[in-house]
Length: 159
Image (tube, rainbow, N blue to C red; front, side, top):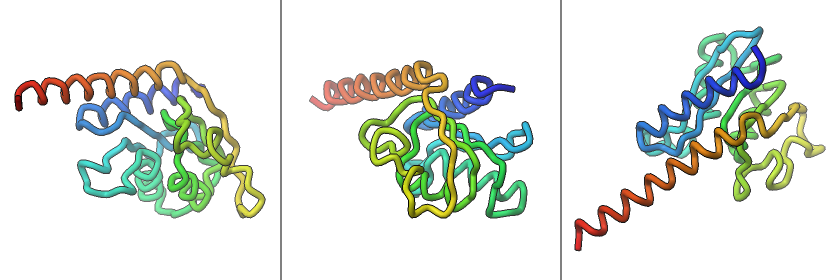
């Protein structure tokens, strides 16, 4: 399978997040051409600010392989990782990150600071961005449009 196929699996998980009224971000961890970890955003549902899709997928993968390190693994995520997730990716020794849409405000692979290029890191991560970016971006846009419409309806009901 190629990057597009794996990203489609992450996009399906992002839809699960949207169904739980979470920001639709999905992630999978692939090792030896097999999905070993899955996750989607759940910080609101779990009352856990660390429950980003990447963290969920990394936790799942580590549990499934019974190791806190994931050498040779690739993380596919629908949105450019934030600083917290980038740190977890380095600590897990993930080899490669493939993401869909950029996150101009808090994405750190391309948009802000280029975290994975920092000289102080003891592990280097290969990064590929823009895989199915349009689909990932549309998913996020549709979610926030729906949310804004719901807020408007609620305001009308309250008046």
